[in-house]
Image (tube, rainbow, N blue to C red; front, side, top):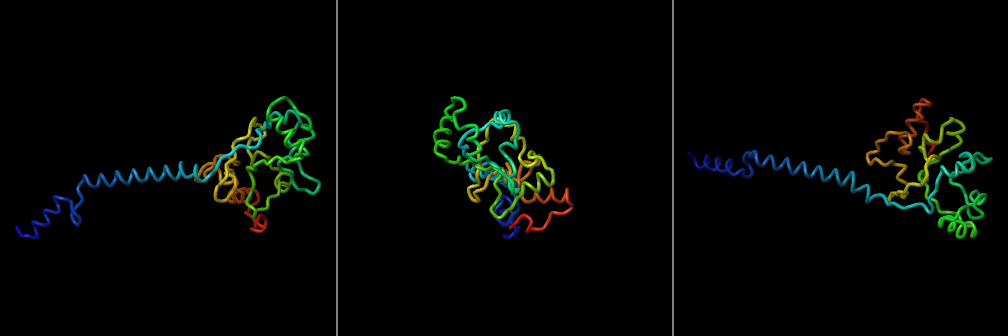
Amino acid sequence: MSLTGEKQTGREQTGSPGGPVKKGDSGLVALFFIVGLAASLAIGWIVFPKLLYSKSEQPFDFSHVTHADAVGDCDSCHFFREDGTYAGVPTLEQCTECHEEMQGESEAEEIFVNEYVAEGKEVPWKIYSRQPDCVFFSHAAHVQGAGMECAECHGDIGESESLKPYEENRITGYSRDIWGKNIAGIKKNSWDRMKMDDCGACHKETMGSKGACFQCHK
C-alpha cells in the first residue's frame, strides 16, 4: 500500500478535515442545529417581545360595564362633536358631571376627586389605539359614513370590567395594540391589531381599492 493510501485511510478513520464525516459527527451537527434553532425561536418569540415592550397600568382602573349601566350608552362618553371630530377618551369635564363629588368610598375615587377633579387636572390616560403621528384617521368616515361598529376595531372593550395593562414599544413609543399581541402579526379577529395592512385589506374588501396614500397619510 502506498504512503498516499495510508494517509487517506488515516483520515477516513479519524474523520479529520478533508475526509468523510462519520455518522456520529453528522448526528452531533444535527443536534447543535436543532438546539440553536430552538434557542433562536425562544429568544425571538418569547424573550424579545418581553424586552421590546414595557408594561404599565392605567392611572385608574375603569369598568365600562359599571359606567354603561350608569349613563346608558357609549355615546354619553364617546361622541362626535359638532365639527365632526370624535371625542375619544373622556375629558375631566365629562367625568366631573358625575364625579364632582365622591361616588362611593373607594381609595381610587378619593384620589380621583381630590387630586384631579378638585385640582382641574386631566387624567393622563394611556391610549391603546393611538396611531403614528403621520396617520390621519376619521372616526366619522368609518362610523357614520361606513356604518362600522366600534367592536370591529376595538373588540368587546365596552363589556370590560377592568382595563388591561398598557404595553408600549420601547423603540417607537406606540402601543402594542397597533402591531398586535402576536409577534408574527398573525390575527384571529378584526380587532387583534391596527396595522396599515389591516386597513388596506378592509378597504379592498369593502370598496374594491386600498385607496391612495394621501387619504390616510398627511
